[in-house]
Length: 250
Image (cartoon, rainbow, N blue to C red; front, side, top):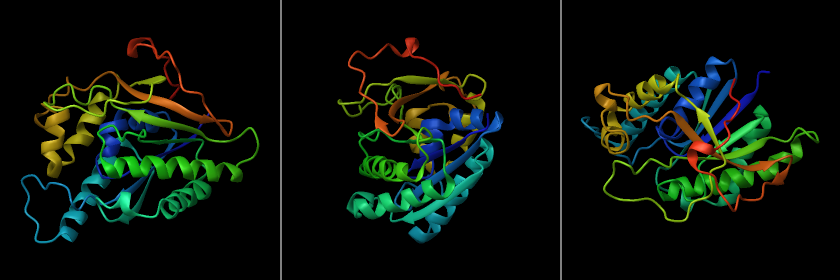
């Protein structure tokens, strides 16, 4: 059955790092994928490119985002254009209301965002996680009973495998995985669309910018947070990654 999925992230490229294979697989299966991006990434690095203003960089990164969305098969891109690096300073209720409006207008069955630690500890990632969770809780009242959306966190447990530094120590248990073996190439090509972010891509996925996608794993990982309008109790005995149940994406 065709379903509608909403991914909510902070910056251009977040969707490709965290869920590129999942998005491509969903699109190929005929599902509607909507991506909401909170900022245009105007405070990020610019790679080999030079820009006179942050506004120029923002426009460039938005175009990179559109190119990645085309590769992954995103049906609709929603740009909020909040100031990059400032999500943590925004009124949480106002940010949540913006996301809630997107949910209520489009009625996705599944909603996905960053976990509370933001995967990397980035303040914008953490802010969008908190705001999205609050938005989902508020939006549930607009859904019929027994048709409330599923709400997931996405995780990247291997993000720091090739980095000299490390991520947050307190992470939420992962409860499901998505098999992306047939869509690793899509994820790689979407990451390649972000030439301005070559530093970040090379840190997490070395070789991808040169066309070597072997570093991209066979799975992407998720945690079910809410279902049927209720909080799902955290798993106190998390399973090994290779023992996790697979999400149904077909």
